[in-house]
Length: 200
Image (cartoon, rainbow, N blue to C red):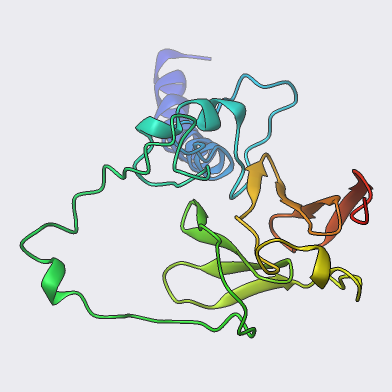
């Protein structure tokens, strides 16, 4: 092949090669979405999923302004959020954006848990709600059937202090001494174990 032919081939191939390179970059960019800040990608078998809560996130919850992962915010129980949108100057101008009913008139002792804008909150009688924090839409609800003879054995009504979150699960300790693990996306019961006898 003479020099002119080689030069012509290069001119024709260059746009094709550039197009293939651009396509490859766009394909890999779509498939390689970055996990949210704070997720421990070194956990064995890690695959990032929405609302996934890693051990690293739980340990460093005190530095995470966007989530509320523990009862009391963090392991230190600081109950403090670093968010700065609400100040002493503008707090008086706040107005409700949405509200929801738990559907029961009993006492409420729960504290919300927030993961990437999704709220998990319990109501009395061991109900769990997953709520979209932006719209107030209920994503899923778990309702437990409690024993009829449970009431007289309770010290402080049928209240619950909230859930625990880890990886893909939402955990709740029930008044009839069970531990229930729910899928955090669907609310489906993944497993349940009896921890004791509520009658003793």
